[in-house]
Length: 357
Figure: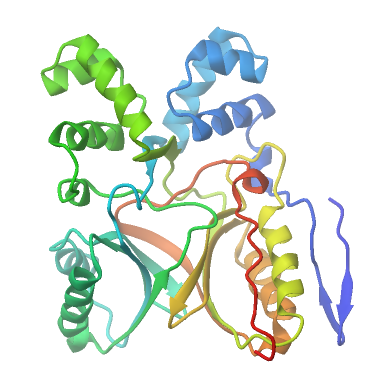
């Protein structure tokens, strides 16, 4: 592994490097290539996977079954929120003076369709919540009701609007799909893809009570609608790595864009064929915080050094304020743990800063 060291005011920063994690080493290159392919296209056939990876079809079929079993792979889809009519998306850091049980939290949050992901965390905040609603009014009502509901636990509720997901996504729940203002047939098919995006047309036909040809036609029409960005996978948290998330707030000064460009390069650095992408979500925010990430690291110390400390060093002169926590367990929804080409997927828009800011 090659590292380039830059000294900034007596602080050693590790900028861009080819990130390598030990959890990749526990799986063969062939297995990791298969995982990358189904992350990019969950419906890739055995023949297509064989051609893409240079492995025989029999070996691909065997390794795929092993990966599904060992990693707990779930086939799902990445939604296009804008085309689905989801106009209000927020990330929320929740701190509680008194921590209720998981059952109590589940009861509170599952009462609404709005929280798509609720994760118990350990660190500067106790819960990470990803919320989606069809309009700002619904979100505002839910936001206020949740703060009232959690007030008895001594809640600090810090919500930020997601401007744009530069990398990654949170899978959506069926409860939200049911509320979408789209055709009922599209809703039913989206729910099947949410359950298993690798499901055969024969099984879809049986489940939907439609003719095989009708299902195939509806499926292709659904993809053309743009509702689905990608048929992909997610995995539950693995013992091999630590999931670190952080929220940041900045006061941009001269040189902010250069620091942002350096951070983008780090977010895009990864193993060539990673088992799990180094960064799973990167999103600029508006509200309590300005930026959020979720990343996978070998261990807690590595996450602190190569994620938290590195980011603090880059933005030190911009009065950075950061809160970070590790993901412990998922109460609602699932995390976007998968393998993708981060350099290809990451949006490299340069966010301009007004002069004098």
